[in-house]
Amino acid sequence: MSYLTEISCSMNDWKKSNYDLICVGLYEENELTPLAMTIDTHANGGLRSAIQSVKLSGKSGKNEFILVDDRPVLVLGLGKKADFDLSNARNVAATAARQAIARKFSSVAVECFPLEGGADQAVSEGLVLGSYQYLNYKTQDKDVFELESAAVLGGDESQVAKGAVIAASVCYARDLENAPGNSTTPSKLAESARRIAKTGGMKVTILDREEFTEMGMGALAAVASGTDEPPKFIVVEYNGGGDEKPVALVGKGLTFDSGGISIKPGAGMDEMKFDMCGSGVVLGVLKAVSTLKPKFNLVCVIPSTENLSGGKAYKPGDILTAYNGKTIEVLNTDAEGRLILADGLSYVSKHYDPEYILDFATLTGAVLVALGHIATGVLGTDDDLMNRVKAASQATGEKVWELPLWDEYCEQVKSKIADVKNVGEARQAGTIAGAAFLKEFVKEGIPWVHFDIAGTAWGGKESPLVYQQGATGAVIRLVLNLLGI
Ligand code: BES
Ligand code: ZN
Ligand code: ZN
Image (tube, rainbow, N blue to C red; front, side, top):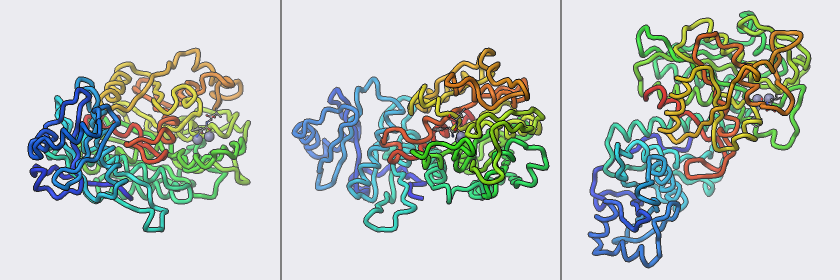
């Protein structure tokens, strides 16, 4: 674990604070932020003249270290004042944290930039996300430098604390996701769920291979048949809202996807350790819930296994029976995510009466073709819920794009020999086919949105918010916002 879990909101005068680095802002209009002005006044115009001499423009992404009274001050370009929003504030704070690490400053304080409604939470989130590094396997001291503390100068205490909890939950998920497949196993996910449940006063149920097979989860059992690594079906129930209907979250916990008998090409196969990022979303949300204790009910399900090609592996042509009784013709063992989710979605549909269901999965390579690493593909059955998802996306800056789930597409996963087949038409609308398949396992009448995070969960451009090109923790902040946190 290498990230900050707490951010203070020191009201200290910048002069009295003992942070190694103070960060302020400059807009493109050449206007200083309030703390920058204070520092400039103290330095008799020294900050302004230093800014002029290094020709700092205030353009977003342009930053400069300047010495004031022998203390380093980082001036961050904020772009045009009218365009400066929460996403910018989060990004800029993350830049401050990354710059502090790069220059080996142990502590950093960032001004709480003025914004209508307050930037306190966003700046706090940015500092934690920017402090994130994945160093678990670095054994040499020279490769390790961590930020020890950070503050939002002038920030509201509860907003700053909330931002830190949310971002630390994202980092918690990233750690599970960045870890290799021989560390993040189904048992590890189960153990993580257990720990979160314990601190959060939640109920946890872990079903092993024999139990879920006996119960009729024929799809998860088939995918798990090719590996000796023990698979798990993880259920966590959080009760904070009395007898209200729960929200259900289901996450794909495929801890390594080789493709199975329909084996994947070797190049890039290592990235399939990230195939559990759907479960990372669920555990990240649960982690935040365990600390913030909101007043609602939640049920979370993670079907988890590896997809390998051992002697007992399931095969193309096999027909499986899912937990809701529907039969599935397997035409490609690499379309395994939808199979394990079929049992997860059937389970929450049958045993709970959810207000709505959200599922998260690195489901299709096709979503990467359609949307790149920029937006998560979303598909669903209920316009109101979809609109709420889009509003949460706007509020958090986590981009989503809706794809249609029209009947014509749903026809494409009907099988001649069984109820459904696990692939659609070759090379056509692969992401929609994945969602069309999942829809068969969501009880009619329950609003549902599927998040295909295969493009956004890892591998995008390195940025202040994302360490190297590793796991992003995408859509955790969005879901927490949707849940009203
Ligand atoms: N885990 C993969 C999806 C994936 C591929 C995520 C590449 C990120 C990058 C999933 O299990 C899979 O292999 N899906 C197949 C489905 C196909 C066989 C219908 C795919 O997308 O090729
Ligand atoms: Zn696969
Ligand atoms: Zn997969």
